[in-house]
Image 1 (spheres, helix red, strand yellow):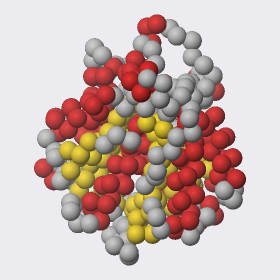
Image 2: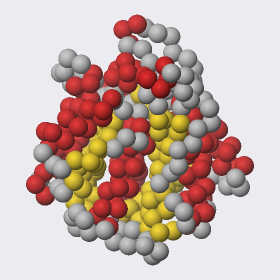
Image 3: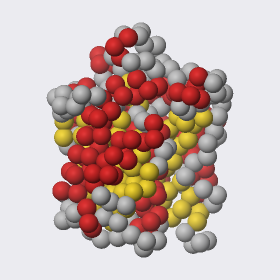
Image 4: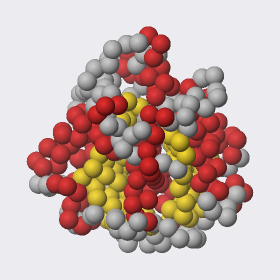
Length: 335
């Protein structure tokens, strides 16, 4: 245990589980975004022929899983576990996809941090030789998230400048100890922090303290600094949360400079009218399994630290006046 454990919150993987395949899928708004060229499959209809956005999201997630499997020689029978999570109540996108896949299922909820939580858990299982191959996936949908957490889009509610636009898309990856691909070498699982922010229209600020805490803990546990990484990627803090994150990290003694990129702040172009940027489970997932993986294969990045963030609240907790707690998990991916 002491050999694998580093510090208080970080785990090193001796067997270096590999991401042997990844697949991304997204909607028309994302096709026009800064990440459009990094997405494997683009759909012109965000409803993908379904009658509800919830069913559309499920279809996107299932398709991403199928695409990830198709890039390997593996079938559903070769996958020992499916780890999935999403934003909807009872993680229905992941649960129903698991039903259709027929793979033993571990459902997780880390909100928008779910992709890194899933990859970290998958790496733990593979590194421990409890499975040879694990499928990890997540998804989100603009219309489904608006209806659950804010207002149905049919009401045409005016968005605040601090609002973030939930990314419509899904991503999946196969983590295995057999095959080639980028290695997951470390995972830093974060703590839940709550700075008393209550507005669902400002989730970037609610998540920023957790992101800063996980990053600083990772540096301390691993005796590293920003200079040890080609890129430090955060998930979906957006323009507002990103500024707070950088300030908190600087106060802790670390200057990120050009090493830092936030997917939420970067994904949409200014003319796309996405407010403070992107959010949702698919936001971090497209950034990691789309942008990062493809740039690694091109040789631009060799070692990155990806930290995905999540706002841990529900419509019920908001209606009862509770504040929004934040979580952030990190993994190191090496090409």
